[in-house]
Structures are given as structure tokens and as C-alpha cells.
Image (cartoon, rainbow, N blue to C red; front, side, top):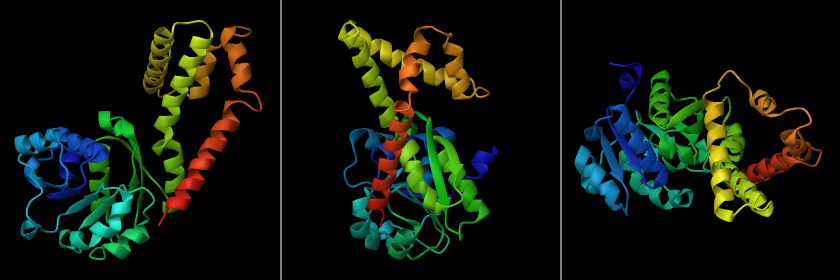
Length: 277
């Protein structure tokens, strides 16, 4: 048995199986978590979820009189639903339960106040590439989380990508601003590059394909070059006095991309703080 398998919980209840919840479920099944260990509570299950549950023997929306505390309770509902849902979730929590929350803006203290049956709480911020197993998740834990529970967190969240443990929960908002929201920045960069190509005279569909393939390929090159910093990869593309250097002179100007990205992340950080609570 692998170390990952040893760190899987005996029972897990997933509350909310939308895009992120479903992505995690797929990752768990791929890594070998048996369906019999999983219970899902999802008021509006889509057809694919129902089929997956039937195929793998996963309990989907069992009657409330069959609910029992799980070793791990994953909260993947919309943050604004927490207050209404918390009282009904009490039977799912015991003193030995680990709560893992991916609810944006809901702090460990907020979760502890609403689900007081346990003090072992992990707050996580994944991102959408988790849907293809290429996500990254920033994680902060309450002081009550045991080494065993940390290992389970690593295994469960690691099923959809990399996991980064944070020294302080106060860093979660910054993680949200960089990697949580970050995929949207990359997608918008792709849009902007395509529009720039169109403005340079390319047909719109061709400009779109060129921009998309360039971003995809560059990301994969970076992934396959772990020993090279992004700055070095950039330098490898740039010939002195060439076309790339001319473009970078614009992007790297004092009012170029770097300060713009800094302002964008700062705006996301401020909004994350406003949404906390």
C-alpha cells in the first residue's frame, strides 16, 4: 500500500458537488478511495454525478436518519449557504472529525463557531485547474489538526494538484488573489493576445488559435522545465535587438505589465478581505 493510500480516510462526507466538489471526487476515485467510503450531499445532483455514484457505490443524499459523523467532512457549498446549512450538518461532525473547507471568505473561526462539534479545521483555497488534476491549493490549519489529519489533507487535496501549506491563515486571501483567481488572468491574457493578433491583421479565428496554443505550450514548457525560472525561460526566447525584445520593452516598462498585475492582485486581495466573515 502506498503512503497516499495509507493516508486516506475511512469515511468522508462531501457537502456540495459542484465543479470543484466533483473535481475532487474524480481525483479521489482515481487515487483509489473506495466509493463505499464516500457520502455526498448535493441537493441538485447532475446526471453525471448520479451515474458516478451508482457506478462506484457512493451514497448520494442518504436520508437524514442515516447520517453519521465522518472522519473527514469536506465543505464545498457556496459560502453564502453556510449559515443556513450549518445547523443541519451537526450530525456529520464529531470530536474526531476533520473539517476541510473550500468556502471562500469563511475563516477558521467562522467555521468553528458554526460547526462546534470539532476544533480540527482546515481552510483551503484550490483553483479551477483542479478539474484536470493540475490545480494548486493553499492550505491553513487550526492548531487542533493532528499530523494524521494533515496527512489526510495532503492526500485528499493532492488528488487534484499541488498542495502548499501556509504558516498563517492570514495568507489565504493573498493565495486567493494569486492562484485562486489567477486562472482568469491567464485566460484574459490569452484573449488580449488574440485581439492584438487580430489588430495586427490576422483573421480572428487564426489569431485565437495562435494565442491559445502559445499559452498552452508555454505553460507546458514551464512545467517540464522545473529547474528553470520563468525569467530564464523568457530570456531563452529573447534575442538582443529582436522582435521579442521590442515587445518586452513595452511590457516591462515602468507602466507595463508588472505594475498592472500588482494592482490587479491587490484589488483581488482587498475584495477577499471584504468578503471574509
